Image (cartoon, rainbow, N blue to C red):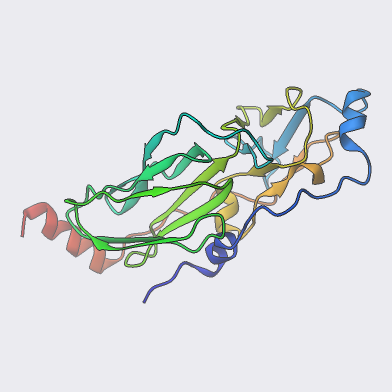
Length: 228
């Protein structure tokens, strides 16, 4: 039986525990304007890191307006590859491919196992807890999806300059930073309390190389396109 890659397995076991203590009183320093209200993110090449996500795992009011989201399977990829939802929401996993998939997750925040199924089935999974979930296919190792669950439903993403405005946050406890490239590097989300705002924060990550199609996969795809 195929498994997630070692780097992804590390991430799959990520869960949000008690907020990390803040020995330097970071929240108090922000109130005293000793820290910038902008978090600037850089990648391994010191370029602005676009698309990083801050998500909230602190206790929040019950989600009374649960939303059903969709993570489809199209051309052997999860679509969208990154899905951001609120704790209490559900996710439907339709299969729009002509082949069957076996969708699963080992993540502590929400583990599940949807055994081999085709495009006539669209199972739904609930996500009651905040955290980071890695989704894989037990048949196709290159199929990796990510579900970010915020307790409050709030998310903040870095812009083209790699900046996130954190001035709207009352406290930093319970907030985590994540970027899709961290998955390939085997890195778990980082607690915001561990990041100083006095200078740009550099993540030693870069875009993973594009996956090349094997000859067997290429022949199989051509056969599907010919309809036999």
